[in-house]
Length: 611
Image (cartoon, rainbow, N blue to C red; front, top):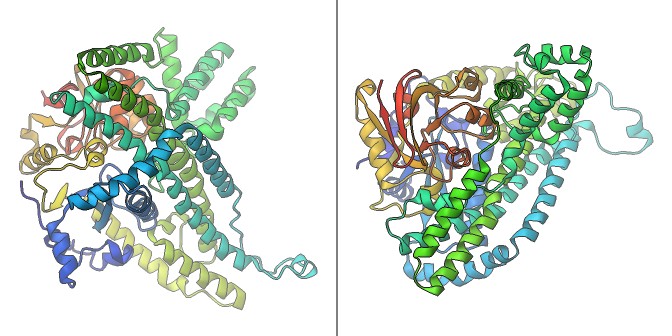
């Protein structure tokens, strides 16, 4: 299994993008002028983090990658002192993020880290519920602080109160300060993001490791099924849509709600309907906070929230109304999932011969069940609620830059790095204070136009799934269960990539994300906007999924993704809906076309393309 050398890849610059490196922080670049770093990079295995970034990163959007680069690694290496894992190193090629887990290789050092980890992680595991309750208070306070943050415009003349109250500060100063506060709140939010997350995955990994030692042939999927059927916050936005669908029928306004796909048209009609205002009041109650769910993963500025794009939740409500009117159930089959979960637990527990092993089984499973909800719940607070507010605050910053001629369109701001935005704001504020024209009015529009062309060329480039030197055995548990990267998956991806004619491929291999076998027609949806094209009973084929895709799972009979392991969102949700899923196929959205007949085996991870 051979992958290209990272320096060979970076040497092949896409024509017209020369100098693209200035769009990203300098530490993200593969280098050739430092022999030590050059050797490290060439000897290291890097894989494309398409789970989080299926498309190239805009310069500003790099903020969340920087945030988790720091947070995950610090918790692993400096706070909880995870014995075999330090953190994750990052690089960028043509806008695509490549990551590499940094392992602790010295057995003596691993041993010396164990007591520290046991002490520190033990405090969290033993007090999980109370500490998580404190986390929610911290997180909600951070969101409220973000919501209250003002991005001031620059007045022609400061109000007289600045003089009469001896304020001693200008709106220009507050603009600069509040931009810093905005960025720091984002970084702080991600500090909280990883406070529990690594330990949440660790608890699952400890249980998985125990089960695989006791039962060497146990499928990973069986272990994941033992912690299914647990209610998590990320289902709540979708549950609100179901509630509103039922209420619409109850109030007799369902014909109005389903009369048009345009929310503004439907809203106007509801205001005139006899019980329409009553339904709208219920909707507005649901909107805060539950419609602060992103239409994507929340990682990109263009992932607007339901509150920003009300046509999307309207489509979900209309789908549920249609199902209810046909007498179909719109609930997740939770009781069935729980019954199967309990059956599997009892079956494996009954096979354990030693009492001490049974005790450890109970403890590790109990711990995994306790911590698992956080693994999904934190997504709503961070990637959805916080990010949705954050992106719009940044648009307020962009409005100031546009007003002063530094950028031509609010959405151009994402083509600047966050430190470049701070420099541009200084330019604007000092020019405003002085009464001259900002220099950026001549510099940035031209640079932004060039960067737009670069981003388009990046999107047309196909990043290799992995580069560098593949390890003999991939052992990092997080990489396996979350990203779906194993030696086998890498070999499967490489085999598909070597096929010159994708139309000749008859099968794809991935992870068995959720059990079951079905046949049906494919529907390739690369974005949530395309989910509206899904027909009842089709098989969803996507790069990855996020909570905003929830209404899709009420229509489909199976799901296939390019990236992700058994703990990815698509795998978790499909298990809760009791439908097959194959995740981490590497190339499904490139090989499969809408309308193709597929056979999906979620028990083996095999997808047959029947054409």
